[in-house]
Length: 261
Image 1 (tube, one colour):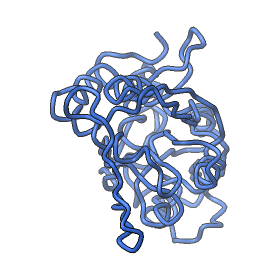
Image 2 (spheres, rainbow, N blue to C red):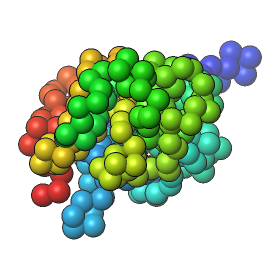
Image 3 (cartoon, helix red, strand yellow):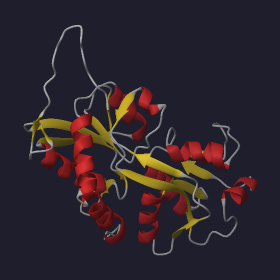
Image 4 (cartoon, one colour):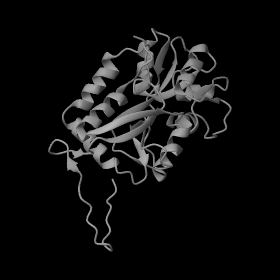
């Protein structure tokens, strides 16, 4: 969170009004949010063609608490961070890992979720059981989206640190990586446990998680640097954590919701 001050100009910046006595009130101001709609259960297109997910529910609740209006746009993952950085959108959401290199060009919200990186394979996979045995077999391939946390974990924590390693098949969307896994074009997809467990639960035995977890990652929303929306959204996230709303969303989307239904 950035503190803005100008002692030279002796300018006082008034705090936002409070929506319900303790949260900022944006007076119905519009927030244009861009997302990928390809990362269930955080955000995706359901069987009815509706954009749904944890992040959509969270944003609806945030907007209500800070009196804002949210509209959505769609963009590919590889274009999202640059577009938000350039101010084309007010905010981005798609399970974005908070990382120092990304924080050089965008501002992050506070963490709204912590997840663990896991190895997702086909349900009948028996050629490898962990990262070491995958790396030892040169015939095995991994799918990943370029520039994502799974890509970097695959390169540096599973393979040899060569970002051009031909064993990593680059694909545009996370859904494409899972489809390649299902059809046998690749043998491994790295993902956070959030999305991985959702796909496994919906696969009827077609997919499974193997091996040890490969570390944790914190998710945050992204904004153009210096955005006025960071502080009120952080306030709403803290409020939702305190009153149990975040936990209720976790229960709804990670335990109760079944992909494909």
